[in-house]
Structure formats: structure tokens, C-alpha cells
Length: 333
Ligand code: AHG
Ligand code: MN
Ligand code: MN
Image (cartoon, rainbow, N blue to C red):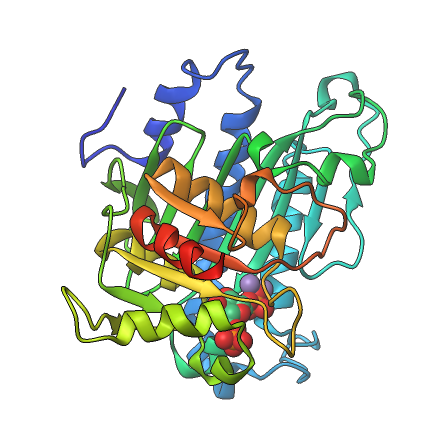
């Protein structure tokens, strides 16, 4: 298996294809399509600061086309790329009310994978030049190949994920993903449009010193969460911890995985299931976390063990260094 730092993502995908059980190359092609869409969206995100010059959402550009909000644009780019390459049978997205069924009558295009995406995560950060991301999750369909996908194909427990990952459009653009064999991070060299394996075998430190939560909601949190936050702030042992909250899950997760930390989006008296979406935010991040020696739960149960009931379902989310998530869970008992 290629793990040297001058390995490109393209080489890595080819090299690792043979290591998947029953691999027909379909998953490799799918990851390749995501790689391509990531570069396209990266290009759009990079232009965000030029919006006053190129035209804001709602304006009409010089070609007479309506300018779109970046999350809508990212959604279109991902869906288009996946559709064009004929490698999935269904897509669900934060930006689409319902899932999209891709009919392929052609025998050769009886694809077995469905993709779930949050095309632009942390979109409120776009206007202020702060990192945003894309999150994706991949499952094998449950219903028979060659028939239209159904909701059942999307409502699978996170444990069934075949692959998951994110792209962080930050000071550098990185694609980080897992196929169930650890987590690897690839950094884009923008000059030549190539991702290089910069972060092989990423792992959460067992514990850390960062807690990430929107403390503006403090008064509305359950008592256990309030107590855990007070614990993080207490002058004792290696505490107080440092508070860091970017407001884009991808970026907060990425930092915490490298430095050690916990990310929390608890339920509150204003939002009974928190804010984050189980299928295309929490499940993929939970799969990555577990693959990176971290942990993800809703406060009590492992995220990956939850049985989804709705496409856009929300769930409380605690994720990061294993010892820290366990500690938070203790407080919530
Ligand atoms: P999105 O931009 O896809 O709607 O997701 C934003 C999410 C997540 O990325 C972030 O951590 C969280 O919402 C921030 O929410 P608050 O502003 O309520 O803290
Ligand atoms: Mn999001
Ligand atoms: Mn989003």
C-alpha cells in the first residue's frame, strides 16, 4: 500500500482498489468523481471574496445567468459530477428536500452505491473568508440493483457506511476520507490541481485540551452538558481547556483530530435534537472519528448504531478524542 508523501490521491485510489473485498472498481470511480467535484467546488469557494466584482447571489451575471448562493452551487456541482459519471444510483443532499433516484437502464450502469452529502458545511462562514467544507457518506444500496432506489437505501445505520469523508476548504484545501481502513488526508496543490497524501493514518490523540461548542446556547443546555462545560473550565489537573469554535463542523473536527479535542452540538431547550443532521453530517464524521481512534455519540449511544428514521433528521452530537467524549457522556448520565 502506497503511503509515501509524494503519492497522489489518484495513485492511492488505484493502489488501494484491490484491497476492498468484492471490489469491481466502482467505489474507486466514485471516490475519483468526488475528487473531481472537490476541485470544482474549491475553485468556486476561492472566488467567494470576489463576489462584489463577479456578482452576488440573486444578481444576473454578464452571460445573463443568475448568480447562485455558494451552497446551492456546490450542491449542483457535486450532483452533476456524480450524475455525469454514472457511478451512483441515488443521491441525498442537505440542499434537496427528497433523495434523487438515478435511473440507469443500461446494464453496465446498474450502480450499487448511494451518496449522501452536505455540499457546503459552515456556509455562514463564506462571507467572512473562514474555512468551510463538504461532507460525504457512501453506502451500498439495500434494494435490488436495476430498480429505482427507495428511502430505505438512505436510512441505513452509519455502521453500514462503505466510505465517508470531507473536504476542508481552508488555508489549504484537503480531502480526508476513510474506506474503513483508517483515515488519510490529501492536500491540494492548487498550482497543478493535484491532491497529495500529506496526512497518512490520521488519528485523534487519546485526549486533548480543546472543547468546541456554541456557548451562546449555554443557558438552554441540559444540566449534564452545563456541568461538563464547567469541568472543562475548571482549574485542575491539565485544565482549564481551551475553547475553540469555528462554526463549521468540518473545520472544528479537522483541528480537533490533529490537536486533540471534543466537538459538541447538544440538544437544548430551543432545539430538542440539536442542529446537526444525522445522515450527512454526524454519520460520516462518526465513521471518520472511529476510524481515527476517536469516538462519536449522541451523549449516550454511538452515532453509528442509531437507526435513522428520516432523511433530514437531527441528532445531538459529541465527537472527538475518546477520553473526552467518554467524560462528557459520564456527565450526561
Ligand atoms: P451548514 O452550513 O451545512 O448548515 O452547517 C452548519 C453547522 C455546522 O457546520 C456548525 O458546526 C454548526 O452548524 C454551527 O451552528 P451554530 O451557528 O448554531 O453554532
Ligand atoms: Mn453542515
Ligand atoms: Mn450545508
